[in-house]
Structures are given as structure tokens and as C-alpha cells.
Image (cartoon, rainbow over all chains, first blue to last red; front, side, top):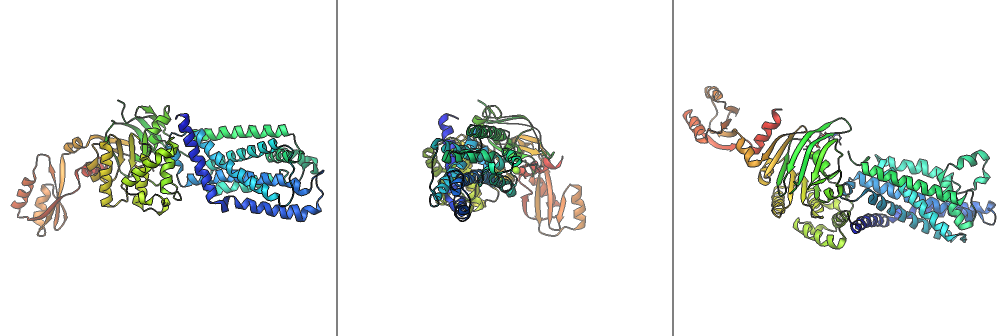
Length: 257
Length: 306
Ligand SMILES: Nc1ncnc2c1ncn2[C@@H]1O[C@H](COP(=O)(O)OP(=O)(O)OP(=O)(O)O)[C@@H](O)[C@H]1O
Ligand SMILES: [Mg+2]
């Protein structure tokens, strides 16, 4: 394929993926906005007023970045996992398999769709937070880099899940039993410095901790972990997942018999 | 000029241990109208799946218009269009999007794909349905949608896996005309079907595959002229008496019921001889027909003897 043909093929997937989640926005964009608003109300306003803030920041200011991250993670992940598994289930994935489109373009197309949904929900959720508190921006570049890399990483992870999933349970297990616990334990609601030392150590194995803290650093300028370290972890995991996906696509794992 | 399809020593063992193909050799020259025939489970869909990239082969080589599917994958894929046996589009998607998106995967921009989609959707009578979701189409329409989708990148080789299954007689004949025109315009066509009349009507050459092996291959007219016997069914005016029945049995005539007999004629025997013989026995024939069409008989003969 020529470069121009590759661009057309890539944009075909991106377009299709975007139209899909925009058309069914009550199922794709709205749920995160509703749940996050509830978090703002309950944890931020009702309970948060009883909780001591962190440094110069109120409790709600502390949890907003984590809650935004939570929305980005779930949406990027489930968009790609759900859409890709759906096309496997309906066998329309065969439309791609019989075409000359390269594995990299397929991965890039689906992942871009997931990133777009992650970013759109992230921005929506962030905008809603303005009704509850005001935002401070410590480093705009870092917030943008972190939100982008996080949605990239989880879109890639969602694709991996979609490729391996054999039934609908296979795409709901990971968000429920892996992503949600890791996010809750990833310092969305607390600083790990408040934990006993052993739990602090264990928390450091949770990749989501680095994303939440990196993103929060962009807003507040405070973090439990090094920002450089966080960037490095995010990027290495993304590269590893990118290659894993391309490899699986090339060999046709779970796609060709 | 390379062949449209060249398959050498193709083997396929599915992960569950089923040996679907046991070393298939097949050459389909460019411009051919080729039939791939065989009973259920023979391996037709498996061969096609390997050619178009839906099934991983175990060993052997496959070239589409001279492009090896392993080393020149994208050229090979771009040269072939596939109408699969089972529906494989998103049923929630609109007809026009299914077709135009497929073009996109081949790198064909919408500005080129849209007029082309219009042309083929009109030719196959689907233009009015372009904005319907695919799930709203009837079975025959879905199949035609897959034909349009397979043609959208103007492939030189078109492969159709049972394209007329579940299509009514009138529509089937229209489809035949359409496929013949495509072939006349220079496209190579490979088709599988269980309707041997269809193969006889459309195909210039066929391969008959049975249990993962090709048991016969060649021009339809050569294969038919090789046929040594042809079986006729005679409907009789009066019931057979038991003496006559015994007599007939000596001539290799089979009784089906009291008013029906079957007679197989060799190449050197004529229908005149047969009727004359029946006349001598005072058996009056009310009507007569071929037991099966001739390709069907060859097919049954080949796939039963093994
Ligand atoms: N995914 C699969 N896993 C395991 N075995 C399979 C698979 N697909 C097909 N087979 C087996 O391979 C053999 C050939 O199947 P194939 O679908 O190629 O036959 P076919 O000639 O297309 O039959 P039909 O006329 O019924 O469509 C059969 O024994 C079938 O059971
Ligand atoms: Mg088949």
C-alpha cells in the first residue's frame, strides 16, 4: 500500500470507530459523566467537607484528577475491547482480514478510536468538576501528556483484551476484576503516604498509581512518585503492548483458524 | 501471464486435529470461470479461507496472480475479492457504509468508492436499500450486498462461496447473468456451489474435491464426455408384472416402484435401442427424464466410490 492508501485505510477505521461511540453516546459518554458527578457530590461535597485537604488543596481538588483518570481509563479500554470483540463476534473483523490493510494500521485505527473516546469523556468529566471546585493548573503540558499516554495505554490494553476474549464475559471480566480495583487502589482517593509502609510498597507495583499521580502533578504540582519515573513506566508499557498487539494480529491469534 | 490462482501441495490441519486438506494442487488460469465442487465438509471453504487470509495454512504455497500470500501479502489480498459462505458484516451498519468502508480498507478514498458503490448497488438491485441497516435486508439481499462489497476494489479474481444458497430461482438466474458478464469483462471467477446445474451453466472448468483431496479436475465438457453411462427414469403406463420385472433385471434395469424403472445406458447404446427393447416386452412408456443432470451423476460417482 502507498502512504496515501495507508492513510485512507487508517482514517476509515478511525471514522467508523468515532461514529460508533458518538452515535450511542448515552451508553458510551454519559455513564462516566453520571458516576463521576456522583463522586463529586458524595466524596467531594458531602464527605469531603469533613476531610482535611492535602496541603493547600481541598479534598475535592485532590480527587478530581484521579476521577478524571478513572473515566479516561475505563472509556479508552472498554471502547476498544468492546468494539473489537463486537466485530469478532459478528465476524465483520473478516472484512479487515481479507483486505491489504497492515496489522499496524488496524491497531492504530482501533486505538485512536479508544483514545478519542477516553479524551472526550475526560474533558467532559473535567468540565463538570468546575461546578464543584475551581481548577489550578501547575503544568498544562504534563496534564496533556499524561491524559494522552494513559488513554493510549488503556486503548492498547483494551485491544489486547478484545483479541483474546472468546465471549462477552471475556470483555467484562478485566474492567470489573482488574481495572476497577487497581484504580481504586491507585491513589485516586488518597495519598499513599497515608498508608502503612507495607501497603505503600505494594502500591508502587500498581501502574495506575503512576498515571493518577502524574496527572495530579500536572494540576496541583504534588505527587507521591517521581514524574519522570511515571512517564517512563507509561511509555514502556505502551510500547510493549503496541508490539504485542501487532504480533498477535500478524499471526492471527484468535482471529484466524 | 501468471495464473489467477496457483495452489501447490496445500495442507490444512485444524487445531482440533481435523485434516481438512491433504495436499491440494490447483491452477486456475486468468479469465477462467472455475467451479470448486464437493460434498459438505470436503474442504472448499478451507481452501478459499487460506487464499483470502481467513485461515492459516499448515503447509504448501498459494499465489494469487503471481503474488505469494506469505511474502506479497498485500498485493495478493488486493487482487482478490471474496463473497463468503456465511454473512460476515455488522448487521447494525448501513448498506452503503459497509461497502464504502470496505473500499477504505483497500486504501480507496470515499470520493472514488461512492460512485462505484452506486454502480454495483444499482446493478444488484440494492440501491434503494443503501440507507437501511444490513439487518433489515432479506437473505438474498444480504448475499448480494456481499457481492457488491467483494467488487468494490475491482479485484481481478472474484471468489464466491455458495453465492446462490437461499436465493430464489429468478434471482439466481439474474445472478448467473451478472456473474457471466463479469467473467466476460475479463474477471476470473471461482465459485463453489451445491447446485450442479449452476456449475454446468456457468463454469468452463471444475475441480471436484472430496475429503480434502481433488478427485477430478478439468474442462466441464471433457469431464462430461468421459462419462460412460447415463441413467434414465421411465414412467410406465401399466404396472410391471413380476415376470417382466425378472426379465428386466437381467438387463440391469432397476425397478423403482410398480410404475417406474431406471435404466443406465452406456455410451454406445442409444435411447432408440432402449425404447425398442421395452416395446418388445410390451411395456409402454408414458414419460421419461434424466435421473440427474450429467455433472451430478459424475459427481455422485466420484464422491461415492471412495
Ligand atoms: N474452524 C474449524 N475448526 C475445526 N475444523 C474445521 C473448522 N472449519 C472447518 N473444519 C473442518 O474441516 C473440514 C472441511 O470444512 P470446509 O468448511 O472447508 O468444507 P466445505 O467443503 O466448505 O463444506 P460445505 O459444503 O458444507 O460448506 C470439515 O471436516 C470441517 O468440519
Ligand atoms: Mg463451505
